[in-house]
Length: 635
Ligand code: ADP
Ligand code: MG
Image 1 (tube, rainbow, N blue to C red):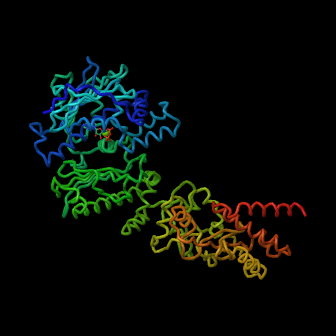
Image 2 (cartoon, rainbow, N blue to C red):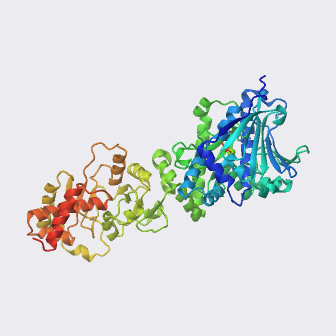
């Protein structure tokens, strides 16, 4: 046994991010400060679950105190509120590690967001605190000083961590009688305007409202030495029959589990019976978490075995459902299940499949019964769900069915593929799409003109993932996907809406047009692989498209950006033979030099319309100057 109680206290400066977060908390005027208690209770419950898990391998850790519990001690005379657990506790190193740094990626993202929205002056921070849990440090919204006494399970040492939230904390050995025999006691010395949190009635009301479904029983004692009385029983919500659970119960449980403060958009709760038995409770959040696109972000579905928390690392859902929060509890695995077993277990593979199916089916039902709620889910998580279209081949058609799109026919509304297909023209062979990175620019793309003129709807795809799935997907209801910037447009069979315009003699057959095209081919030989008369243009003079077979224009750009394109395929330049400028050029008796300048300028115009840069900026400006000069009557 080491005697540490004579060692001196040490002072430590907080990591810069923690200091910033603390400043926000200390100066917070957030009106719903109650949330600090949920954070402390959730940490206490986590600590109890960790102990239960470690005790599977080392039962002695439980000693003569096997029943996990959380005790709140409200002391109005002392002006303090304490949160005590008999969980795993923290060693000295764990205290500095856990309470001196920020490990949560969500919290880092939170700070970035506060900074992006105009600084640390409180207001924006306050609004954001309301949306997202920010953990232990939220205690400083109500406390002027926080003392944490902790003794790790199995250890003979106890430690005290203290801070007033202003830049540094102190760590010192604690007398064993000041710390719980095992676990942690967090003592909040409340600020003057927060003394009501030392009243039993207030604390009880908050616990019932926020933490009624924490899976560890919670007790409250009035005064340090009074008998504690139970407030919640710690029974597992997911094990109760659905008929006994209210929507508020679910929402409360979801908030505790996710650390988010919104309402779930969708709740999926079921018990699977038969070959594998398990309960699952999963939620689609009602708001997008900060770290949704964080590449390190893993799934957030916890694995329990017979009500004992095992891990949140079991990857119980495919990556494209990584926004779902929830848990699975099964009796089919042993309690001491190892990491390797988790990875290879056929039972978990079956659970993964079952859970994925149930969530997708529930999303389908939601889309039918509450289209507005579903639209919000799609807005927040559609970009992630779409990854499944190419990652999960088996469910491709189902995911395409869930997908919603902006199209040339919609404004802010979303369109489902089945509605697109139902509205297809008789002669239309494919589902057309245009991919790019900016929706507004897509809407004005020249490549769309011929499709619009024929009343053909085109999907406007502006998420980076779109180019990938659209290039590989098999199609939907038997109709293939086709990029409007790729290959020949095949529009000849589909009449234009304003039919007369089609009557004028096909100018592509005009020998003058053919000569112009042949001339353009020689001039632009190095830049394009072909020049041809366009079926897709009606108003603009030119546009670029990808040759048949290769990646479409947007995918090509993305691959190039990622350094993954091999030899970049040269595009095809399409010329609109009906355009006045093109007609004039074709008929021109103009000199060859002007014609060449015009052809090169048209090519650069096509690049600009595609959101790219002109090929040779200096040559471009010289040509433009020459042509303008001539147009203005210069010699
Ligand atoms: P999070 O709970 O998301 O990890 P917090 O800021 O709430 O973030 O807590 C930070 C860390 O402090 C926890 O991960 C845990 O390691 C440690 N901790 C906090 N409270 C306790 C407690 N009562 N018992 C044991 N460890 C705790
Ligand atoms: Mg926490």
